[in-house]
Amino acid sequence: MKLYPEKLAAHLAKGAKSVYLIHGDEPFQMGEAGDRLRAHARSAGFSEREVIVANEDSDWDQFRESVDSLSLFAERRLIELRLPSGKPGRVGGEALKRYSAAPPEDLMLVISSARLDRSGSSSAWFKAIDKVGVTMAVQPVPAGQLPAWLGQRLRALGLHPAPDALELIAERTEGNLLAASQEIERLALLYPVGEITAEQIVAAVADSARYSLTDLGTATLQGQQARALRILRGLRDEAVAETLVVWTLAQEIRSGARAAEAMAAGVSPDAAMKSAAVWHTRVGPLKLALERHSAESWLLMLSTTSLIDRQIKGQASGRPWDVLEALVARLAGSSGERSRVGVPVPDVFLQHAGLHR
Image 1: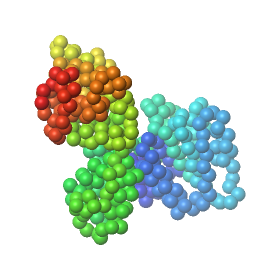
Image 2 (image 1 turned 135 degrees about the vertical axis):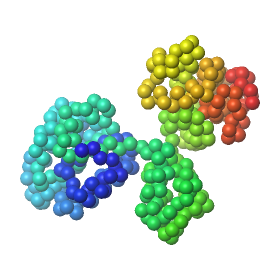
Image 3 (image 1 turned 90 degrees about the horizontal axis):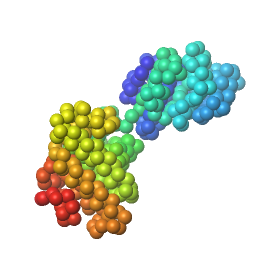
């Protein structure tokens, strides 16, 4: 059976399975799920614990010996199998299929793995585990769902936040669930049970947001101008190289320019996306951006990425981060629109791109 991380506690209250596979790329939630399973195993009498790390085919001898041997110290054992690569290989896949065919009653197997791609989640060993046990895909909490995630945890501790308070915590901890959890625990220590306001949040919560280049690309295409600029400034504060930032934006803008030109020639949006080789996860955000920008606007923004690249290399005057900020504001906005968040557009950007305030 497949299970969502937030449903794990309710599932364990009804009784545990013999095999669990947790896979994903969100370390906080994976660690939390592992902690919950270990606590349940201890309470159920699985008093002996063994950790095994396996990647290649040659690493599986220990696993086979452990599951086939009798415990000298405990009647019930917990075995934690870790797959850093998410690929057990041929030997490992066969070992997991064999184990899942008849899992011993005195063993509980918890497998933690890197995020599995489509081939991994459709493999025979994955299906064998899913049939007899539980598989759980752990993914980062999307920005739009983070306030609800935070609110649920705060209410569990007796704190009832106002909506603007939740938005403020989300803004300050986005992309960093560990920091978000720590801030929630700190709020529970600082304030009594009851309502909690945005002013109290400002006084207590540090700015621990952590962003990725993918977050930047998505926010700009979706037209989230204020958030896109906040992400850009977060990347700058984390000392992310300007080259990586401009490369990310150039990839998105290049796809937009190709699709916009195709649409201007009479091609349907879906066909234009296909001709531009837009990755399926980017189709939705890019469609929103294509509604805001003309083909000419896309080409002007693309030429601006070239300007930034020359600035980084010292071949053009101006500060790259200033022009990056103006470019992000433009991409997240509309053609010919003023920045909705008061970003000053450097003259060098205006002169190069032919844009006007």
